[in-house]
Length: 402
Image (cartoon, rainbow, N blue to C red; front, top):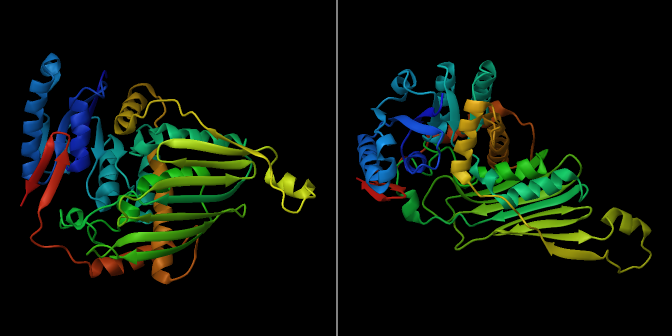
């Protein structure tokens, strides 16, 4: 096999972005052999995008072919035309299609989040375990960002000692009301299963635990429809505790304009923080516990040095994830994020929701059956918007479907 024959399930914003990247030749070991979408307008868009790509990349026109088009994902999975799938449909259906694909002998790449509730993701993980010969990846593209990779490297090296506190304020996810009005399923319990935590923040929650580890207690305050006419959360403030006694906070919102993105990790030996794309380290000359134990001056502070950390490496994002996925299938090389790791960030968002719903701190692991029950109480009363304008955007423009 020289190329992985991919089938894309769902050709909305993310599915079309993956298709365009592959059409542009950014994933040389992948070809899109088939696409499935229940919306006929999206399948028409695939035809248009393929024709446009032939004109845009004349030097590759002979290798750009129109994929087989399906209005049913199951038919595509069983067609024999593909080796792997990219699952990019609404959140509730991620585990369903990954399981169906793997049970039919296909490798699977799942868009974030892994699912809506951890019980369904555990079923997906069990399926992956039943098929150890198949590759199962998560689209955690921000793990390719050099600044986050460097933060993880420094923390895991142990050079700064134990973590004392983590703090991430990520409010750069601003969305106007028009965004939420662009689809009947958006920002509903029945359609998305959550708000900013499940839609915008899966990357941040994944990176938070990937770099700092999982907390053991979560105490969250969520506001539902605080800044928008929606039924799910758009403003979150969370406090966590770790097994070693460290504490942390996670604050996010889609109502702050322009918002910010500051991630700070305080350790015994110094403080590591990034603000935007820069990484800084305030390194103590002596670890704080040792300084506090040996110092005899009442208002003294440990000497420190503030330095900017270089973060080498390319920022390949979605393309990097897909190229690593292809390399794993073709040559057994490591993926950037194994699909089983998707449950960690989802555990955090589920715990935050459950803490808010019950009005108390939640220990991890928590009662996953209770979370599902509480979620589906809200699904039963969820309201879908009517007479909405559905908007799809990709690198070639914005398409409006009434």
